Length: 125
View 1 (tube, helix red, strand yellow):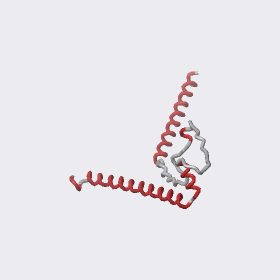
View 2 (cartoon, rainbow, N blue to C red; view 1 turned 45 degrees about the vertical axis):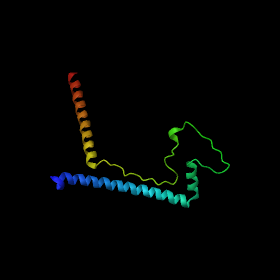
View 3 (cartoon, rainbow, N blue to C red; view 1 turned 60 degrees about the horizontal axis):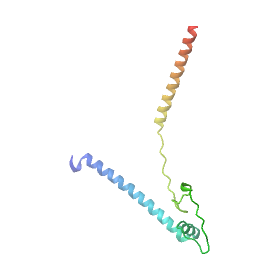
View 4 (spheres, rainbow, N blue to C red; view 1 turned 90 degrees about the horizontal axis):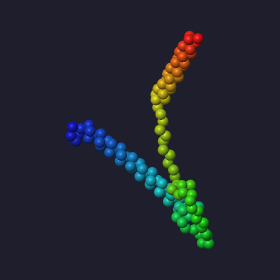
């Protein structure tokens, strides 16, 4: 009960986890910006690609605008951007074993019913 109770501790723990996740996202964003900055400062090709994505070009260049492609052009990810893969979510071995056992029981029940039906048909003849 009160400020030292179990509910308050759980609430504080969830807030701490949320703050930790936000801090991790900020660190990832900071690393992204640092990588982009390093690429733009050191690599002329990356700088050229980024400038073209902003709509600028070199002197004497002409542009042709292609309309109607919609989602086919991915402008959300500039060249040289670092991608972070999320860890996959796995199904536990116990869950897979339970599902396979249930499936085996269903197949076994189907075979029993089929044999019962075949015997019933043969006994009528």
